[in-house]
Length: 224
Image (cartoon, rainbow, N blue to C red; front, side, top):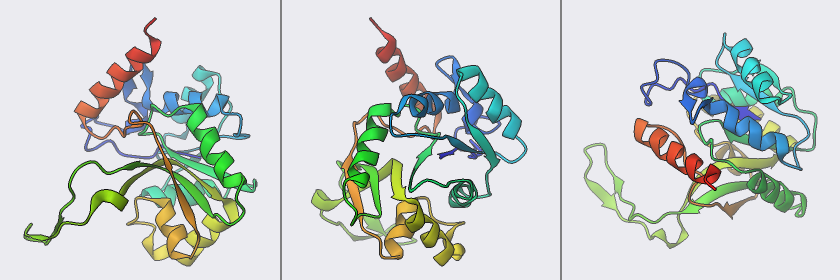
């Protein structure tokens, strides 16, 4: 499942982030291309901005990718919940279209680790935190400085046992409008989630600077 219903407000795009041009293609197109060649993926479902389902479908057609499109929700986890209604496989992968540098190899690695361990409810892409982290109060006064040795920044793709993710969403419907990470719901429901270290290039496009960096990295990929 590709969550692609983001508004793009922080990017200043003037429209949904999924359709912003990145290295000659809509942002969504890059994730579609990676999922299309991943060996572990059987079907692709896109949660599109409500009203833009046809536009998202057209992006898939131009990329030569077969995908089902469903309208997303007001919040990310609501979009995931709607797309999950269309899933009938044992395992499911959730990815944010805002991470367009995703590689098929990473998708397959994460799915493979989940499939190999029945005790896991999920395996998620993550990167070790390199900055010193400060926990602050509402007035921005430092409360504490946690040790960063065990801190990771959660990313996508995130693979789950479909039944575990579905149960977690049903158990915490009140949180769907606030959480930014599906693994958090699975964790709260008691599911074991494993961290899978990701390459540094798996960045999220949130600001115009992120978009420029992503363009440069994609240019490096295509350079001889």
